[in-house]
Length: 314
Image (cartoon, rainbow, N blue to C red):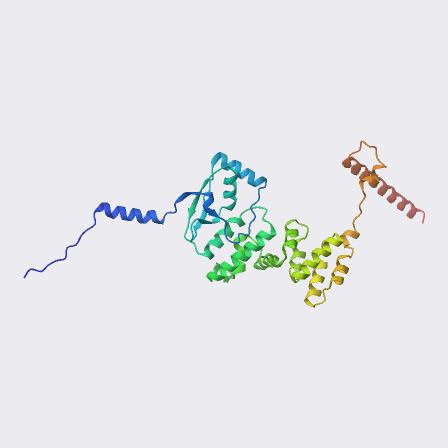
């Protein structure tokens, strides 16, 4: 009885190579030209896309050379794509009159997409405090969802970084504590946060004010408008303490904000109208300042001589 052998089909050499080639090709990221109309902003994208001078320069560059660095996006369930990195390039392409832009489409979950979105924007110069605050918050939440930790190994220290320290290390911040101070700014109401971005309120007072309740923050906005003043660090800290004790009333806030600050007490202001009557009409402000300094130096020297003479006659 003859044993029946199963017929074994061997793949041809061409099939083997084409299979390997297609396998490698699948692993390569492909750049696609995608219509701008199909590229949608990342959900809760914290970075502002403004038509400022830098945007105009980018648009001019794209007109001449095109988009040199492809954007990164992921497919949306209902069609189209969600931009992960490249929001400014998309807007610049629009201003440059382009209908498409080069994009790399990746399969990313929410946490991975958030981390890429934040990291790609943190490299920009002149980030606003609000942008940095919300970006750090989003990245922290994404890392915590992933359960991610980064090992830091050195000769002296071997420890695992916390999520906040990881964000600090990758963003170039001096510590995880500073990251959390930025995140705290997200507790400010929009009106106060805008003042921080506009440098009307400094970072340290803003951090302290973030502990005020939303209604207290709104009351502060109205008080600042009435007093035409912004709180110093000391004033912000006292308002925070009164708030924590449940004693921050409108009267208390007004009393604190109506105080003269030390910087105001040390400041001497002379209006142009006051000075003009002492100088020829042809004098510019710079010339007036130069003359005032020279006169003050002469007065100081005379005063020193008078003091020396008075000591001789004692």
